[in-house]
Structures are given as structure tokens and as C-alpha cells.
Length: 593
Image: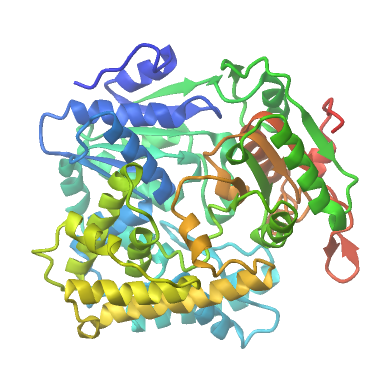
């Protein structure tokens, strides 16, 4: 039985972990949500009395890796755990075993690379004036697809474009990420045996970040819970105030609606103690609450004399000078580089700004966890293999690299390659033995892929699907690198930068607001807090969207928070962006900095 020291969990957390029924847990920022979720998974794994699987669904692959590693570090056996994103869940448990029953999947399928998707949509959009692939975002509910574009005058054309898009995907046996969810839902709906079978396989379904979950995803999960009639339990956790993926269909379901859909008893619980931020920082981001929640400052930082500043006067042309000043002040105060984060709403702002920061602070490293310089299609075989080839063999990375190796070997088997003699350690040994003196990142990967397959005795030309994945990986990577170079990141193609993607943070983090969810830092510096960016121009009329983004920004900080709405940033031909309205109108006693 998994046990813990009383100092490891507070009473709220311990009660949630030990609760025997299903739980709907609302957790404020810094309340130890991930710790509670991790301990709960470990607790249930240690109590397994049969061979049923514990399923944990996370918002990102990175979160899945971190949670599994924490559990393994506790000494808990994870052979009964499946953890990953909802898309991976649908592929693994629904589409792969039951896709043969779906007419668009029965003859095989390929998950469409993001770059190839954009090329296809741009080609289809070319017949329509003023419409690009950026307008074509959509998401599915259980009734069909919904457009993400708020410009209603474009909707008629967009429906025509998407009809052509869906038809072409069907004809070429391809699916995109949204279609993964739709086809999984269709299979669950039409093949009535799937939900009961899965309910017999799963003892628990854990859901992290429920506020970012889509309606169709809730349908998939509750179908299994309903079929299990209480034999499959759930533990769903999140914070409705951090719901910032609404434009993609994500929303925070109410406990009453979730109970009704799941058809099982679910106990509502809450974590209200913030162990991360000072009371002053909590008092600032609490101004942007959308859902009324009680947050108590409880950690060692509670009484820290935080500086909270808001600059509405710096010109956008002088922004990098101000950012450097704030970074230098933070470093001088003793904050480590990896505890400093620079945020902006869009990557295009960060790419050009990071180039200037690198030049002005040559002795500092800058890491962008979302600024992946090559194709980051997480289901592409070559992306999975690149994670092993770009990381070094070390005790700290062993568990993670072993898991990546298992994914690679499983994929090779799915492609029809005999892997009976290929063990995890053998694959890692052959990857570690590769030594290539090459500066360009893509050239390095190209040569490393070829050398590894030669070492393994696999003739790549004999497996066309692998070649298709390879072409998609490099086509998308070339396009991504050229775009990032154009935005000012001239260093982006260097293999040294490639290697930073999968290692632990070692420098100052640069990230979008969406990309930093779940993280925390001593110092948070956010710029681009402008109408049309925060909130996004697609949600320009929504103060609610702006409030949630500002809530996320503020709640990442432990000690200091610096907010910037720069002036004079051009918007179109004749205008400039203005400060985010709900921030500019917030009454707070800001510090001069």
C-alpha cells in the first residue's frame, strides 16, 4: 500500500486522495493540484486487486511524462497505468482496435501533419478572396463541427472549404486531430459494445485540467463511466478560472452536468490553499476571477514583499531595453535564470524579442518550451525518435528515454517491422552510439535517422508509411524553421538549439501565455497585454477571455509580477494597439519599477 508522510499532503489534499468514491475537484492556482493528482494515481495503483487499467488523461504529453516520472520515483509500479492526452487515448483505445468498423478508417489512415494541413487548407482557400487557413479552425461537438472564426461574413465560404477538406481527407485516408475525436465519438456511438468493454478494462479514469476539455471529450469519457455504472471511478480536477481554450471548444463543465452525463455518484471537493504566490500577487490576479473561488495564501511566500508593476508608457521600439532591465534587476536580486519567465500572447512577438534578448544578454540562455524548431507532430514516428536522438544518456533521463524507446518500438511494430529482438536497452544503446559532427539541426537528424536504421538492419524503403512520415516530418520542419527565421530567430536551425527542446529548463523561459499553463516562476514578466492580443482579436469583445488570460499570467508568479502594455505597436495600416481594457481599468496599488 502506498503511504506518505503527513507533511507531504495537507488535510484537503489527503482527504481527496483517500476518498473512495468518484471526485470532482476544483483546485485554485498553487494548491498542489498536480501533487494531489499524482498521489491519488499512485494510491489507486498501489491498491489494485485485479488487472484493470488506471487511465490518466492530461492536456499535454509533457504533463503525462512528468506525472508518470513522479509516480515511478515514489517506487510505485506503473505497469497498470496508461497516461497520455485525449487524442492519444482515442487512438490507442478506440480507433486502433475498433477503426475497422468505421468506413473512413477501415482501409487504414494517417494522422495529418499540421504543416500539411495548412498547405491543404491554403490551397482550398485560394479560390476565396480574403480567407486563409487561419480562418479554418474548427472543433467538433457530438452534433458536428463548429467554426472558430468569428467573422460571420466568411462562414458560407468556410463551410464550402471544409466540405472539400473533409472529402479530400477521406479520399486520401487521412485524419487531423479534430477528426480523431469525431471518429472516436462516432465509433462509441455506433458500436454499442465499446463503452461497456472499456468500462471493464478501466478501474479509474483521471482527468487533468478539466476546464480545457471539449464537449465531445466529455461525451467520450462519460460514456465509459455511464456504462460502468459505478464500477469505473473518476477523479477529475481543474480550475474554471484558467479556462483559456474556449475558442477551441474547451470549457469548464459544472459538477451537476458532469454527474448527469456520467450517471454515477460524484463527490464535489476543493483545494483552496495557494502555496505558490505571495498574498500580494494573489490579491492582484484575484481581480480577474470569473468564477467566484476562495483562495488562501498558505505557503512560505505568503508574506513575501512582492513587487507588482504595470507599465503603460514604454514604446514598443524600446520594449527589449525594458525587458533586459527587468531581467537584470531580477538576476541581481538573486533569482536564478530558470526562475524568470518572459510571456507574450503570440509566438511572433516572442521570436523577434528573443533574438534581441539573446544579443543583449549574451551570457544568458533562453529556453522556449513551445518554440520547437522542427515539426512537433507528436504522433509522427520521426518526432518520437528525435526525442531520443537529441537527448543525452544520463541517470536523470533514463526513465523518460526508456518510455520514449517503448513508443518507438511499438510504432515500428505497427508499421509491420519485426521487433522481436529489439529491446528498449538495445535501441537506446544504438542511439547513444551515434556520433555525427554536424551543426545544422535537420541535417543532423537526417543523418542520424539513416545511421540508426542501418545499425538496426531495417530497410526504410521497404516500409512506405514510414517514408510518408519522414517526408512529412522534414517538409513541416523546413517550413517551420523558415517561418521562425523570418520572425527573427536566426539561430533556430542550430543542432544546439534542437537539443534544448527536450532537456530540463536551464535558462530564462520565453513562452506564450497558453504555453506556460501549469508552470511557476519566481518572476513573471508579461508584455503584449493589448486589445486584440489579450483578448485575441477573435474574442475582442470578450472581457471574460481577457480576465482568464490575466488570471493565468498572474498566478504563475511566486515573488514578482511585471505587466507591460507597450505603446505604438502598429495594428494594420493606420492604427496602433491599445492597452487591454480590463487590465487598464483594474484598480491596484502598483509598484514603481
